[in-house]
Length: 350
Image 1 (tube, rainbow, N blue to C red):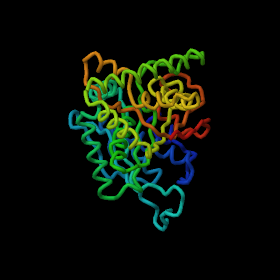
Image 2 (cartoon, one colour):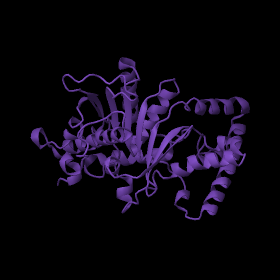
Image 3 (cartoon, rainbow, N blue to C red):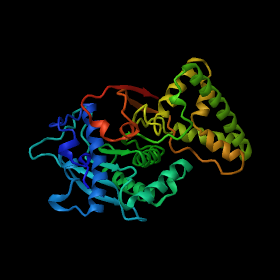
Image 4 (cartoon, one colour):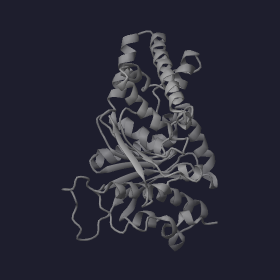
């Protein structure tokens, strides 16, 4: 059964008749719609909707994109990503003089589909995010090879990365991988998973702040213990710090909703780092902000060798949706990000 949320003419941004690539709201809306296009393309495949019956094409054709390449999971043959190519209207000159030139290519990744035969593989990858080993999956291997191929062929200045939920984790991981080599792609990351204790949901600000301070101190201490356990303390610590610092020039757009417990911890993650600097204990937080407390605990207990948390980044343009959601589904959904009446709070953390 077709949901109206799959139909562009019923749930898409019909107000966006012309795209101004200098307008941050337009860029956000287009990126979100291209991610939705991946979702619906996979649903078209599952439901065998073809030709005039396919629902996905308007999600990209409305903004003058076409499919350059589909990214298919080697395990379940589902479509998890699309490389889109911009096809300007005849006679339309390229806006290279604009502050934000339009992208030539956009690499978009969908999140978890709860319908159809893709669910089991998507769920397994969601678990991999929690386990911090998404980078070991065959899906990510396909994704990063596609991204690297596009960058090596066409350069990085006109390629966007975007994704939602699980797909956002894919895009962030690919973006981090390239940033460490000095390649910084524009990235639009919607509802990026940040799995931790739901501290952001605590309403008492003093209690919330106290918990965050204690967590930072414990995390920094365990990070030091982890380097001691490895033996070559200074060398290992420097390598970890250098790896994280290498990402600082990459500033992705990070879209979160406070009502979405999957991504809302990014709000506290960045705000707390700033608060600790103001209190004069930024050194502790600079160590803590590079590490996952859960991963460090597992390492100290000997349960798992510690590896860099995939979801942590030093810099971002954090965009928070201030409109209270009706429920979790709305808070975590991709549709919110092309609404014309959004109330957003944006701040750059570097």
